[in-house]
Image (cartoon, rainbow, N blue to C red; front, side, top):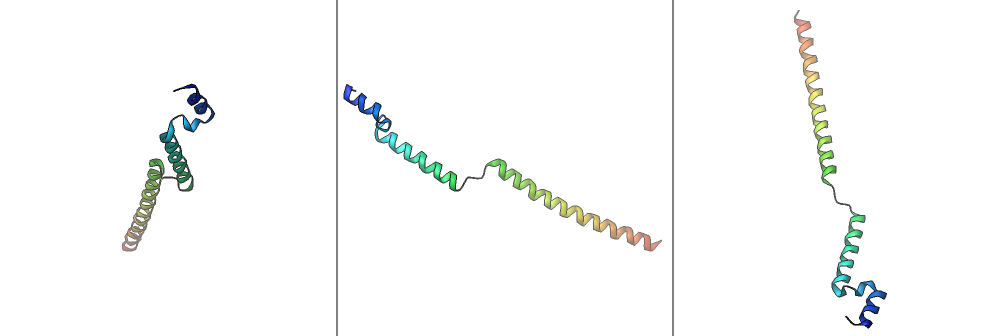
Length: 80
C-alpha cells in the first residue's frame, strides 16, 4: 500500500476493506433493521409460552377432577 492509499483508507474507513467491507456493513445494517422490525422469538420466550400452555391445560384438568370428585361426594351423601 503506498502513501496515497493509506491516506485514502484513513479518511474513509469503508475503503479499508474494500468492496467486501462495504458488503458486510450493508448486510449488518439490513440484519439490524430486520431484527428491529420483527425480533426473532428466543428459545426462552418459546419455553415460557410452552410452560404457560401446559399450566393452562393442567388447570383445566384439575378443575375437571374437582368437579368429578364433587359429584362423587354428592352421590355418596345421597346413598347414605
